[in-house]
Amino acid sequence: MPLRSILIADDEESIRHLLVTLLQERGYQVRAVNDGEEALRELSARDYDALVTDVRMPKMNGLDLVRAAQAASPETTIIVMSAYGSHDLAIEAMKAGAYDYLGKPFRPDEVLLVLRKADERERLRIDNRRLRREIARATPQLIAEGPAMKEVLRVVQKVAPTTTTVLIEGESGTGKEVVARALHDLSPRADRPFVAVNCGAIPEQLIESELFGHARGAFTDARTAKRGLFEEADGGTILLDEVGELPLPLQPTLLRVLQEGEVRRVGDTRSTRVDVRVLAATNRDLGEQVKAAKFREDLYYRLNVVGVKLPPLRERNEEIRALSERFLQRHAERMGLPRRQLSQRALEVMARYRWPGNVRELENALERALVFSEEDEIQPDALPEAVRAAGGPQPVPSALDPDDLSVKRAQQVLEADLIRKALKRTNGNRTRAAELLELSPRALLYKIREYGLE
Image (cartoon, rainbow, N blue to C red; front, side, top):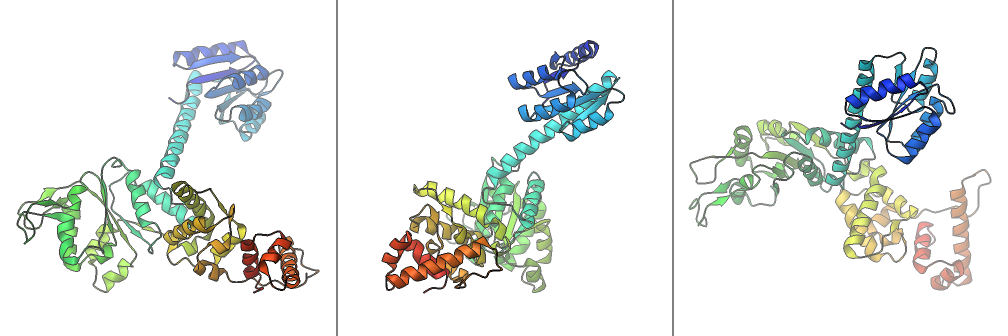
């Protein structure tokens, strides 16, 4: 059980003796002290899973001990004991961080019940911590700062341990395969194959053979029998990416595989059982495809047992910074380049861009920025032209508004005025102007564009 070592703090010897005897008989490691100061010294000297303390003691009362114990040993579960008349103090101790309290006098079974509840809470806390670590490992690109992506992570966490079929919808580049891999990596099938197939990238005349295999002699070039991707994924997970591209004549075959758990190779007379979890992904609206008679309704509902909708990046501006940090770290390590951060101006420009290629386009833009940036902070001029253009120049007034108390706008006005003066003094020579301004030529060029001074 998670709670093994327990510290008892009580100035009544009879209480200490009762608790030590009771808990040692139940297999706990127990140490007892008679005041709060000694209890705090114990907590500072070694780790205890739980502290059971009275609220009224000499030298240091239980409320002060709870507060000090929270700082000295934040992982320790604290349970307070209170005699009649001390309940208000016990409630204060719980507000300060105690988990539960026991009213004196208490029965042995009441003590054990409170510890069992604390045990269960500690198990849940350990499980949640482990699950968060697993999700972080399995979903390195699924940054969840906003409500939409938090809901995606919640569904992934809930559905991953099951065999339920999941339909992942979203524009190209939103991370559909990342979600599929997370569903696989967090499932009991994690050590089995994960097979991803792009249904739109395989010629129509070959896709049935690719998915389900073929028997020897099934067609002209079938000199040997071949296993299909469903058989390759046996025991694991298959992702049918761009499932909306699946030819209509093949859809009944896929439906039969989903319903019966069997595949039949092209040209074969026997079926083979497969244990495969099916995930599907699409950038199309399959509901509209069904209405247009381009996708079978029964297959759509069979695939869409649980639906996950990935929002486009333009609706997730709050996640650009976190995603960017992840990508910059990854590509800097891969390319052996210094780690760099985005400047605030670069972030502002990126937030105004629509990102039609979504997360994939963001990653590519940042890889380019790493290559072209020569400063510790990545400035907008290292970003692709399309991203910079979306930011556009930000003209500033030539003089301060006396009623405007914004430090940021005042700084912009001052910068723009100094740049104008430096360019005038150097007759437009940007290199010399940069020297006067103590800026790099690259930084000066960016500011000229930012303030519309070209």
